[in-house]
Length: 427
Image 1 (tube, rainbow, N blue to C red):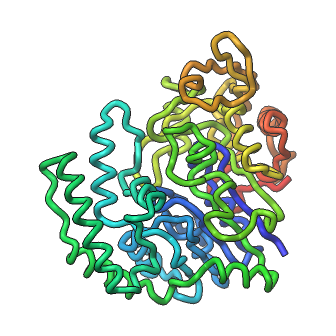
Image 2 (cartoon, rainbow, N blue to C red):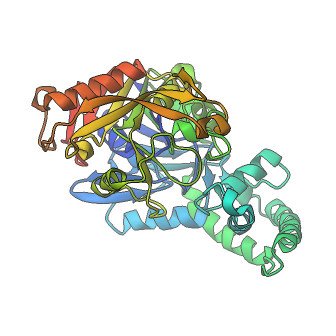
């Protein structure tokens, strides 16, 4: 039995979707355990490109059960639209291959409005959310009294009464923050969400119980992380983080499966570093090289379309992510993007107020003043997208991967040199 986890070790967008898709053939269940429709995975399958947000990548594979775990926050409208976008293209999505946890929390219209109002009021100190109500929904989850879970939608009278109380409170607080906001109608929200619930009913189950039965049946299970470890609410660059445990720490809490059940932990790293939104970024390149990486790597958000900030590979930050997640092996992605550069830099340490360190700072005030100490690697100036084995790669590319593996102290298992499945070298 194989129980595998794929987790990003940077600030997200590491191309995890490709590795998950690559591994799905040998797994019968694929599980998302945190985040919401702020995540984005681009997967090429059977010559077509799919952009997934809430749905696990396994939904594209016949015979695979895709599970949305209890750790997610679910916008039912967004989920139904994403499901329809796949069925319109001939992909099977039904109660037999997509399960949604009845414990997952629900994003409601006021969460999205709150998200926008809070970001606007923060001004220059805005966190840089995707504006989809993810953080505000997680906040209500932690606060408990204003939280609504998927299973609550099927207890109609309780749901109606609870929603009326919450909407009255939200209208009062939102009005005080922005007098121009139109008050929300609890009855209209109730009717809309009851309709969503009816459409989702064939998919809604206790996924924790279902997953434990699957493990007893010796099914191969694959956990699919969203965002990246440096965005983890507990272990990332707080407060410029997401609102969930996007490192491997979220697997147990977000699925109910104990981490001791996992037999392989794969950390996914991009061959350079990107970041979306605010927060310190020691190796960021605000020059023509940064723009070159952005253009060649198509570094624009899957969900938002926002241009990503680009920079050299940061081994200090990424090694920290590897330690937090306890990865056994790494997948080095998008190596082909660097092929046209004369010389490459890898950050092997920071200089923080005159002191050299390989420890990742726990406070953004220290990370903001960190100066990268680089190790230079010669470029290879050769197209590597046709490589199919390690010996096909030029010496510079092999040295680059070896250096990343050395600094992270984790062996490389996969090297991706293009978007298609066959453009993956197994080591």
